[in-house]
Image 1 (cartoon, rainbow, N blue to C red):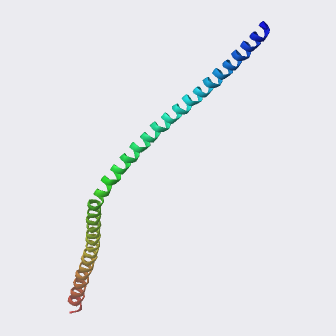
Image 2: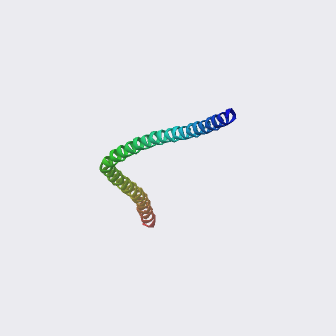
Length: 117
């Protein structure tokens, strides 16, 4: 009878040990999942903050677009004016050269007429 009681106690102890081991294992898994969930929650919080920052930057840049368009139009107009001035200066230089040659031609004409008479 003593053996039976020892056997029952051993079986009960073994079952209790297995049960404690399973419980410890389950608690360990819950702890890991809880830790992972906390990490995911922290990651999502960082992502949400980044999205909010990006949204604020986009809003700020969106507000700047009309001013940038005005500056762009002003720069394009200045470029057109500068291009026009360069073209006009080129034409002036060409006219000055033509005028200089016209003077030379007139002087030659006067010189030939004075030699002919």
